[in-house]
Amino acid sequence: MLLAIDQGTTGTTCLVVDAELVPRGRGYREVPQYFPRPGWVEHDPDELWDSVLEAATVALADAGIQSTDLSAVGLANQRETTVVWDRRSGRPVHRAIVWQDRRTAERCRELPRDLIRDRTGLVPDPYFSATKLEWILSERDAAGLAFGTVDAWLLWKLTSGEIHATDVSNASRTLLFNLETLDWDRELLELFGVPESVLPRVVPSSGIVGEADLLGTRVPIAGIAGDQQAALFGQACFLPGQAKATYGTGSFVLVNAGTESAVAPEGLVRTVAWRLDDSPAVYALEGSVFVTGAALQWLREGLGILGAPAESEALARSVESNDGIYFVPALTGLGSPHWEPEARGLIAGLSRGTSRAHIVRAALEAIAYQTRDVLDAMAFELDVLRADGGGTQNAFLMQFQADIARVPVEVPSERETTALGAAALAGLATGAWSSLDDLAAAWRRDARYEPELDPSEAERLLGEWRLAVRRALLQD
Image (cartoon, rainbow, N blue to C red; front, side, top):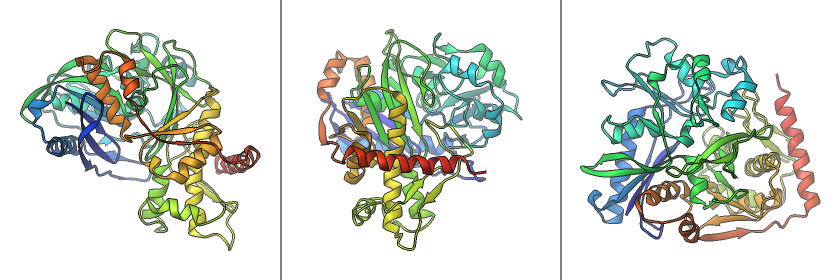
């Protein structure tokens, strides 16, 4: 049995997974977010850690096993979120600054875009970790401090402070990691004023890193990956050109780009997907859409026009069309392929006939439009798009995604592909599976959505959507 930990933005999921890659137990704990100022988003690192312990306890009980029955632990995490703590006391020196946080937007405009893109495959954006770390360190002496993304923080806690490390996939999200050398880049460290002493050691995504002291038992930690890379792995996208889209708070589209590092097409980033022990690193092209499921959350909590998210499908189907309504959910700026942190959201096409159903439908359609924009930037000829995350429960969204992307969409039988990816990485390192072929054979499909909308109608809708996006980008 393997324990998979998926520490996400809104909560922590733990799965107990067997040798057939089938979940036998589940646990979940919600994680609060803090918004001290507009555009600022934070977590309490200790609350993240507590949620892991609580979710793991529930998952083990649900599986009917003890921690002594576990063969390994795999860890996936929300990426870019930045934690800094005191090495001696183990106490955080500041709340974790979440990937959604935009406080460093002005600083990002000052940064050398070409240098950063060439070295890291990324773009200067508040999304990534370096400017968050720079902000935390700006009024502190860095001596005795440790930095990490959430994986490094949890690894430190799991090993009682014995191990300060991060895997290559998470390191590649910091703006400090060189994709060619697969190590921290000294020139970038100087640019951001980050001393090497605060950095974690970089390790493979699959391989035994150390032992967790988990609920009274020592268990090998054998798999680590950022959540989106873990989902790509969990979706068995092991060959170049295979792609997945995750529909959650935001949406993230990744395509396996093979083992050769190269400059990403405009509007996308290149990242390390994973590295299996001593094998060459596998890279991915990625498009990050910041607000998708979060738009439905805003319609529910901010405007009060939506109850539970599950209601969105019935509301969308209750109207024959979007009636010309387009919702550009730039609530925290726009990510790929625009990378405009100052963009603001808009709803276009309103009339006296507009109902809440039209607005909810427009929010769902926006998820599919944004994913299509990313796929177009990738310029890969896809045979299929594998989908995961909470949004896959919405059949209207999945069908509309197939219609707009003009490619079949497949949903796996197990939606928690991020956690499965973490389990698979750990199981490869500890002998639960001997090859990627074994893991590919374990992938199971639940549903497949074929494009049904007339292609000319799809292009008309897409053109009107892109006109709305241009309006959002042109706002002062």
